[in-house]
Amino acid sequence: MKVAGYVRLSRDDNKEDYISIVAQKDIISNYAKSRGWEIVKFYEDDDVSGYKFDSREGFTQLLQDIQNDKIDVVIAKDLSRIGRHNAYTLLFIENLRSMGKTLIAIDDNYDSSKDNDDIIGIKTWYNERYVKDLSKKIRSNIYSHMKNNKYQNSAPYGYIVDEVTNNLVVDESVRPIIVEIFNLYLNGYGALKIAQILNERKIPTPMEHIKSLAEKKGIYYKRNTSSKWLDTTVLNILKNDVYIGVKRLGKTRRDVVHGKRRFTDEREQFVFENNHEPIIDKEMFYKVQELIQKRKEISYRGSTKHYNPYSGLLFCLDCGTPLVARSQVGRAKFYVCRTYKKFGKQECDSHYIKEDKLNNAVKLYLSQIKITLQDYLSSLDKEINEKLKNLNQYDIAIKKTQDEITALRQEYNILLSQKIKSIAKNPEMEKIIEEQFEELEKEKLQKITALEKQLKELQTIKANTEQLNDNIIKAIDVIDIIINSEQIEKKYLEYLIDKIYVDKYGEPIIKLKGDMESLFLKHREMIREQEYIINLIRAINYLANLCIFIQTTAKKEQKK
Image (tube, rainbow, N blue to C red; front, top):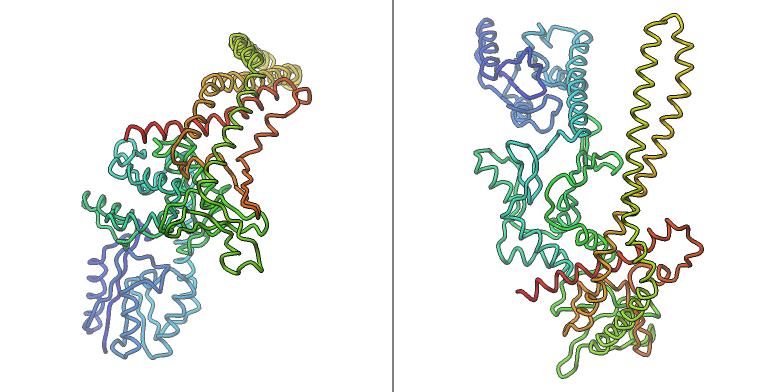
């Protein structure tokens, strides 16, 4: 008789019946000795779930040796060591029997060569039920911690977990790399080109970096690591809002025990804004998201040999395909319709335009926008200044509303106290007293809710008006920087321009981002006073915020 022992240990084991690998081997050896058998080999799996049957190295080797007739009898401490999946465990026993082999589970007092499987099926069902219940409890506990932001999984690339606070803190050795990735993308480089740049500079990949951090702490890192940056790796970084301070938990989940993970809908996730220090500002991040979507729609590659500030922005007015850059010896850089370049004049005209002409057209157009903006601001100057003067009135209104809410809350608490005292003195009249106080309580709560809504509206208007006061002065000066720059850069163009169409005569038609014209020309009489203030703030802030980023970037580059 060729007798083998099988031992297994994992985290899904019952801790009350926890028994080590060594102890399992001793139990099996003593049992075999009592039967006059000798164990020819032990097969073991340490820290592997019994619910899995296809990823256990020891168990897989055991199956191969049984099929090769190297083993006649398999001994395990109990059936849960063989597996915690009911159907697979019973199938394993049936296969052994069909091959004339035997399974013995010592603690379950089971011998497949003698005992009926009908009763043993209850045990295997219970073993599976245990691991499913345990998995459900663990998931429930994790989701509860996620919901209350008390759960922290492994830190994403660019962050480390503070061992004291368990919060995410910036990994300063990685911060410059992430900032550079975002800047390169804004400057017209595609994800593939960025990956190539990082590989050429031999920058460690995210997985390599995370592995090195683990090994410095003496932790064995089991996952495979790649030494090459991929375009997908770059895109995952660009799309991850962790870099603007957002903590997002529950992005993936398993619906069954050890099942395949699936990505969850955003509504299933637990999202915490402003959770930790951001590496990228929100304006840059959302601009990148917009570019990712836009480049996806036009199959943007971002890997051309020569820098092209208009890639992804320039389109043929007739056929709608992008214009492609062309450079020839002795000629200035120019753009032609992609359809024309590919199929010739029978499909579309060339829509030929020189880059110099395009640059001049863009600068002239922005100059006109500047004049329009100046006229617009000038016409609204008195009204805006009047609103800014009213900030004190907002402060007074806010203070008054806050005082009214405090007073109402005190009155409500007094009502509750009076009700409790009245019921204590006259318990037999509790129902009547409840009815008398119910209407009063309802009235107070309605007033509190209404005032809290009013307070929120006042605070929003005040905050937006203050922000307007800070930003509006900067807008015109920033546009001047763009107009007066010697070379127009792609990131500036993409912040202001949605698309540039070129007609068959080579004349550009520029479309700005956002619906600025409609915002400027909105009829005030059709908007209620408060809505008008908010829409005005949004309109000016939209342009001002874009331009502030451009101004900041320009100053940084001037310093360099």
